[in-house]
Figure 1 (cartoon, one colour):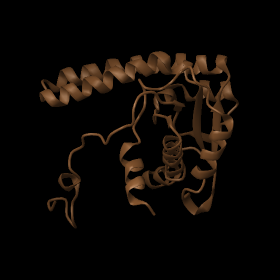
Figure 2: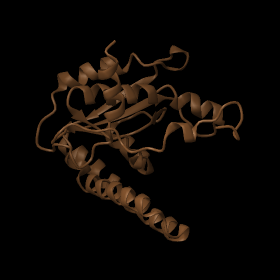
Figure 3: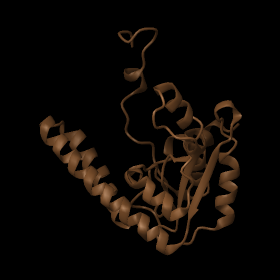
Length: 218
């Protein structure tokens, strides 16, 4: 394997919001190819209970966009209250948070305009399950979702792993005829991305976040 290419893919697959191309159509054949790659991901017990709802209908996208925006406003107000209660943060942290916040606001306002939305779903519900069972259920859909995002990135398409629509999961399930026995895991806005290539993000070094054998030893 070409490790340089693989490492670049893994370190530059970003949450794309402001750089989504809302005007360029996304070909169905490209999505189908990416999904064939995505379903090679591991799934608990090889159950393969995943389903992928693709939304291209303008009216349905617009309605989901409205619900997403409503949920975002609720979320943003809660975050503002938490930030105020936490007090001042380091300047670097504030600047990074501001950049992310601006891009999140941008996407929230335009979510309904994206060429395609993909909602990964998994058979089963998380209500009244214990922590292990919840982890098992989500563990059967999240690897495929990440593989899908990587496959899209490799083909010049951007996406972002979002969950704010889940505040209105029932309404969206009714809109799209998603059976009540399935859990929606995420909402991916999908579009070709504009501008130049992506770079690795600034992260806390992994060594500072890694523990060996005990939480006190890193």
